[in-house]
Image (cartoon, one colour):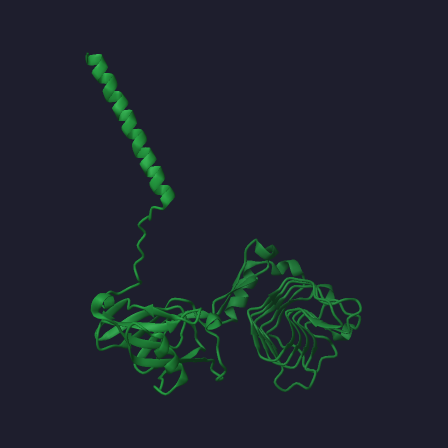
Length: 341
């Protein structure tokens, strides 16, 4: 069971394990949110379970575009279902089960017969579970899901379709102050940059750490989802995002905090039409810094000198090798002189 209680949208989750419990579901024991694009291929329930469902034990939310091919066990047959054990536990308002593909082997019902809400005709039963191990089922699932989910059929997972999630897509976002951010990001990610006041504590922290250059501007980055909840960058976007912003000169860098609380300088990748392009590992607070002219015009990452530095041992080996070569050359020359005589 991947979740005991689901109250929000649960998407692209797959369970292949045996789920045991008094009230259990292959994906969630209780769902009051939304199950979308999920799959269960494991056995759910025991002979002692009181409620068991292939995807959800008790449902008062939405279940869409998913499938179950796992067997379901329960001591109460009327609370056992291939999709849901008990569907509509608090009435039928807001309860939806649609476009779900399920095994009906051994006369297994889509939802338990004690359910207040029944499954409609959009849900498709397979009389033999083995028939679900097919590319045909994967195609049907893909026809009822959006582009964020892709069901794939191969020898993996015993031929049953498995899920390949693709939630991050390339996009270009205007994030305020003339700044744009581009790269692979979730479509629901909102990013905004606002200028810090020079009286702000974060500004003062950066100012105390920046020793090489003058702060021109300082920006605070805010990440949120469509509901205004804070979003963590590592879950919502890929690395190597491109930040483009207007600049008045070329001797500039971005200053960001590194993992040790120090300052890391990022040079521009390029300049074009009065704008500089920088590569960021993720959206973060940054200062636009004017640096000295020496080296400030360089773009791209700092170059690393890969020249091998000879340690003391290396020098000794080099001297020894040179001495041996010299002795051999001297011996050959001496031998030639003797022969000529």
